[in-house]
Length: 156
Image 1: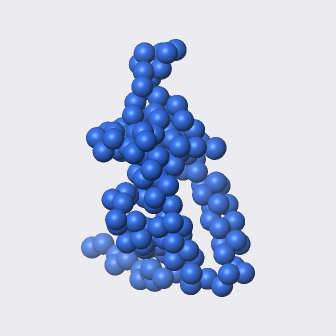
Image 2 (image 1 turned 120 degrees about the vertical axis):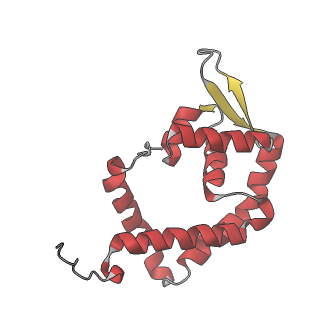
Image 3 (image 1 turned 90 degrees about the vertical axis):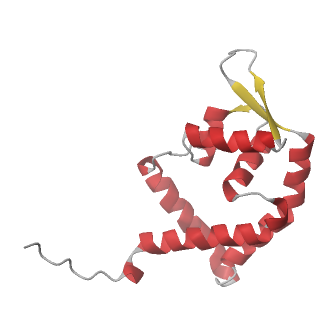
C-alpha cells in the first residue's frame, strides 16, 4: 500500500506564491486595460516591436520569453486587429519583420496610463521604500532561473 504523502503547507512554497501573484497581476492588468482589449502578452509584444521596429518573430519570442509557435499566434491576432504588420525581410525571404501600424502606435500610447496604473496597483501593498528592492529581487530570480524556462528570454 502506498505511503500517504506528508502534508505540505502551500503558503510556505515560493512557487505557489509566484503562481498566485502572476494570476493577480494578469487580473489587475486586464481590469486596468479593459477598454483597450489587450492581454499582458500582447502588450509585451507590441511594446517590444515599438522599442525595436523591424524585429523578427523569432527574436521577439526570445525577448518576451515565449516559444516561437505561441508568439506566431500572438502576432496573428495583433495583425488581424491591424496593430502590427509583417514585412518580408530583404535579406531572407523566409523571415518576417514586424512593425507597428499607425493604429498600433496609437493604441500603445493610449494604453500606457492604464498599464502604468496596473503596475502601481500590483506594487501598492508594499511600502514605497521596498518596491525597488522587490523589483531587484524579482530580476535576480528571473535572471538566475531563466535557462530553466521552456522559453528562456534573451537579454534585451
